[in-house]
Length: 288
Image 1 (cartoon, rainbow, N blue to C red):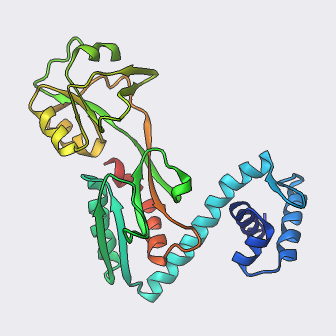
Image 2 (image 1 turned 135 degrees about the horizontal axis):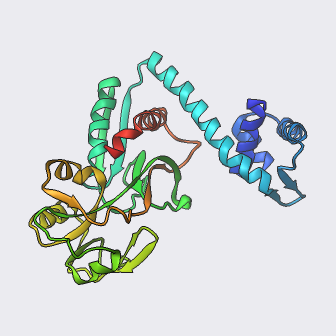
Image 3 (image 1 turned 90 degrees about the vertical axis):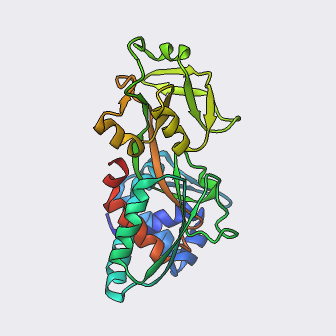
């Protein structure tokens, strides 16, 4: 498959028209139309349904777009990374992240050691940021993403763990329903969904405490009176030194996506692209 044709196809789908794609790529509309037609002919598949007013992506086109868009973005990020290293990239990276998201702390230090002319500004918040008003380039988000609020780049996935203090007796906790008779802490706010998904089961819990601060939750769990769920990196040390234990490990919690979100694919800065590529290269750090 010709890379330029694939790149044009990705642009047409993301922009919603041949005209907008041509403008973004800086080529005539006729060139874009011809290259897409050649791509369809080479694949012997209809990727786009065209009419005078609408452009519809076929099922085959949707599948191709899902994979081709990743390849195009990876290729462009690679070129930028090479160029930036040669040009000694400099400037400011402004990033938003949730509280206590420790894996990113080490990555920020490692990134700045590699790109010493880049300054970093960190905005710690649970709320969804306004990229313009808050002056943010990238936002680290965990879980489902409303793509209308920005472009999400998936870095990796992880699972929270259900934990208790090693002093806490869990001999009677054999299945998720047994948790209903124990003191549980829910991460969230009063409007949060009071459910835990454990394995194939979903249970409605009646939390004794609701908090949106993992440092507080960790402290309460260590005190020995509660069970709660936390990210793997926050309980790793406690599980290793024996002060914490995992509850119902045979019923794993669902995978959560870790994404870096930015407002516009077209206007993303070179520094942001290089940082995203850097996080992808070091994605294992988010699970350690």
